[in-house]
Length: 385
Image (cartoon, rainbow, N blue to C red):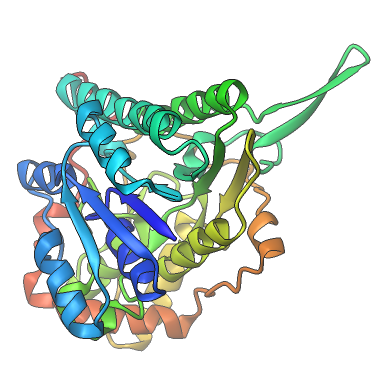
């Protein structure tokens, strides 16, 4: 297939580019390096340096003989997107091209404005480029479980059957995001649903939980092919941050009470889920929503697990509760459905103690490059800047 991967330089975009190219697909990987620019501006550089897309693609081709077509450009520029879609004529589009950080979106007006403008404009442009130049292609859009928030009822897979005064209808599950970034994802879902209804697009919207790890089969061919591994407070996800804290001798920072519960998955399962969505396209005029996670953990549960494994490895891990910089429920009900990918054949990677130990060992290889100043929270949800 001809697959267009938007945001191809990102934590998930680059592994996806390699994964599908290695499977024999014609892959076009697109990025404007916004995430790199923001990371540099906020002193949030990843644990180890990563080459830019052209060099990455050359290293990948030398390692396995497969080609990735690289295009550098801004998905928020419709003229660029029009030329790209008209040229490539994609059969599938994997859309990661958004500012991905909740803390960054809450940092101040400029950061909030950039997040809103970039994320909505990119998705809007993707929709219109598909309608004009590739109306039969399948759009696989990365959403987030954070769209749902933490409701006091079970979280279904995107939709909810509602009975009201004797009548029934299925609606999008109510969203109540906890950051501006997550709110842009909610607005993405509404945009997609509108254009699916009016122009019969084919859309799979993936409600993904926090991802951990940085090893994929393709990345193991050359260290320079590893994805961007962030551990800072801006771009680092919980487990990745805890791994670095454990290795560096920094107490694991639990925000507030630590009861915040989310659904997590290994980066290899992200690739598996996207591939399952690709292999099982929806019909025209259909919007499929899949909750993309494997296991649920609270912050406290994750901290305890990292401490147990780290202590066994001689790391003497400490856990420290700190004031929560975010505005969120710290003790709440959380039960989310995730049957869709299981029905499609997902074979999940479970976060065992052995897996944690392996990841701690991998992070330890870069211990000398850890900057502890990047770990503590620098953004407050309640601060106006």
